[in-house]
Length: 427
Image (cartoon, rainbow, N blue to C red; front, side, top):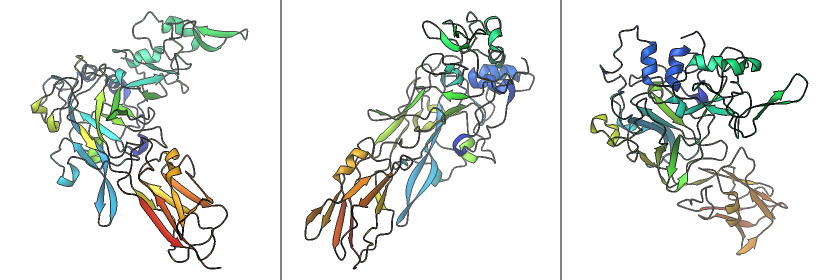
């Protein structure tokens, strides 16, 4: 194998796993191809790839099984709440009771799932690479099973050399055009538009010319978070597959560096979260498998000895916290400023249309209508801003009612309404 390198995605979203360094062809081949590719690359070492010798070894025999799923939960801390990442599925010998238990209040906003499996999967079914030009609806393409870093490097050569070095007839060529009529790929020397024929390579995006793909992206639909009938949108840029790690907890990263693992991030942010008050699970696409073609499954409680049916991940499930409201701006119950906007925060992104259900009452029981209510900015999808137009009259009592018909973006309602009462200041 040549010295061509494939850059692994960096540590995204504060991921503690040390993934930002180049790991060379051996790890790259494992990322895209199989456990066998990694074993072949390190065959000179005394490593028994097919016979696990300890609990920290991978288990390539049988179907790939989910050992643990880590996610964030919201929990009570006195009268307030806190957040912590736990094993919501599976166990670990170093975990305390607070670290591993069924999750019934998974944090709705800002969560991510780390799905840890017991062997390497075909990374080509989980991630795709960036090409120089669009090959279908975008400029990302899958890597064929069995492709190596050398295949990436030969398809990262200058455009004029692609037909010879990276022909579409080669089963391991990448970034092949899939558009009828060809893919627009710049201009010819005479200034006329150039099109790469369907089935030929448009080239790997490699602006630093190191023979490696500059960017990877998670494959749409490869792994899903499903809550009832809802498929939660996945952030393809921040979700990823990491073939590194085992059950040995490293000093750097702790439990969140266990692997191999699929990391799923709802998104793209802002505005996408888990549906509140719903039971959720995970599902793998049928083409996500180990090198032998076995589909991923989840044994009861993550117990590998119990085994599981390939493709059945039903043992993994968790419940998301209910939506809740909290007053975020100072509200003086006895002398509220006449122009004092009221700001409310929810535990999940809000359905903007449902804000029309918020009412304001002016004593003695008169509906007040001189205000606007909305989400203050796209970057704050869980915030509500009530603005008075014009400022409120002095020495008057008001009640703001946020009913349970104000919902999250999946139309899930909170358990309790919110009521805010105050009297405006005197002139």
